[in-house]
Length: 505
Image (tube, rainbow, N blue to C red; front, top):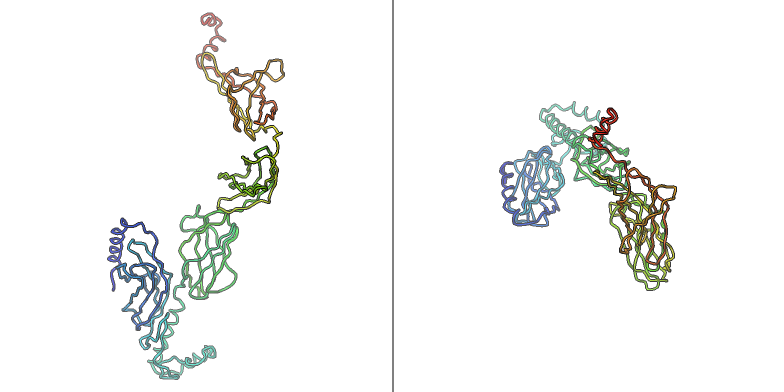
C-alpha cells in the first residue's frame, strides 16, 4: 500500500492526537528480526517483529533520503510490507518504523538491498540473494568475458584483450551495463550501520561503529556546552587503516562533562559517510580520601575528619565491636573538607569507622578502617571561625551594632568579654546569655560600642562535661560616623566666618 508523504504525516498526527490523552505510555516499540525476501526484480518483501502492537512503515529510496510505505493500523506485532515498482538491479536503502497506539515510534538501523536483474529469479531470503538463470560460460552465455572462473587469476590486460575481440554489439552493451552497475556500487554512499557505541571513562571515551564496507575512522567532537550544532572543536582518527568495525579512543576529555560528537568514515575511493550528532557524558573523577583522623573522642561521641581531592558527599559507617551493631551518618553536600560527629555512643566501648566519599556522578570510595574507644571527656571545646561585623546607625546620637560569630566543635555554652583599647587599664565587660544553651554555632550582638573606637575581646566556652577553654584575644575597630550634608555646610561656614559659631550656639 502506497501513500503520499503528506497523507501519512496527517494520519500519524491524527492517531497521535486521539491517543495521547488516553495513555501515559511513552515507550516506543522495540523492533527486531528484520527479514528481507526478494520476491522479483521489482518487488521486495520486508518483515519484522515488535514487542507490542504497532503499525508498519518502511522508509526507502535509491538514496538515504527515504520515501515512505505505511500500513497505519497499530494492531500487529508481526509486520510485513512489500515494496513494489522497484527498478531491477538497483541498490535501495531502507529502514523500518513502527508506532504504537500512543504514537511512540521505534526506528530500526539503516539497511541496504540490491534488487535482482531482470534475468534472475529469487531463490530464498536475505539481503540481495538471488541466482542467475544462465549458468553457462564463454561467449553467448550472458556473462561478461573473464567471468565464470576465478577472477583473481584474470588480469586487467587480459580482460581488455577479450573485450577488444568481441564483435557483437549486444555483448558489448551487456558488458557496458555490468560495468556501469559495478561503478555505481563502488560510488554508492557509504552507510554507517546503527548508532555508535560509546564507553566513557573519566578523561577518555572509546567510540565504536560499523560500516557497510571498509573505510577509515574519524570522530568529530565538542563539549556540548560550547557546541553550535554544526562545527566541532576537536577531531581524532584511528591509524588502524580501512575496516568495517571502527574504534577511536578519544583522549584529553574533562571529567563529568557532556560531549556532542559524530563519526565519519571514508572508503578507498573517497566516498564518505557520516552519522548524525550523538552525545555522551564522561565519568566523574573519583575522590581520593586523605588525612583521615580522629579529632576528638568523648563519653558518648567521636568527631572524625578527612579531606578529598574533589568535591564529594560525606558518609561515615561505624560499628560497635562489642555488640556488632552497625550504623551510619551522612551529609549530602559536596565539599573537599569533611568533619562529622558521631553521637549516641556507649562509654568505654571500642568502635571501628570507615569514611566514605561519593562524587557528583555517584561513584564511591571507602577509607581504611579507623578505631577508637569512647572515654571520659577531658578535652575542652575547640573554638574556630571567629568573625565580627559592625554597623553604624546615623541619628542625633550615633549607635553602633556589632555582631560576633564563632563555632565550637561540640555543643558548648559560651560568653564574650571585651574592653576598650588594647593596652589594658579598662575593666573588662562580660556579655553572656541569661539562659544556658549548649550549641555548636554561636552569635553575640553588642550595642554598647562607640564609633571610631578600638576594642579587644575574647571568648570563654564550656562543654557539657565541664571542660572550659578561653580563646585568644581579638581586636575590632568600630566605624567612623559619617557627617550629613547640614553638618558639612555648617562646618564650612564656621571655618570661613567666625560669627557663624555664635549663631549656631
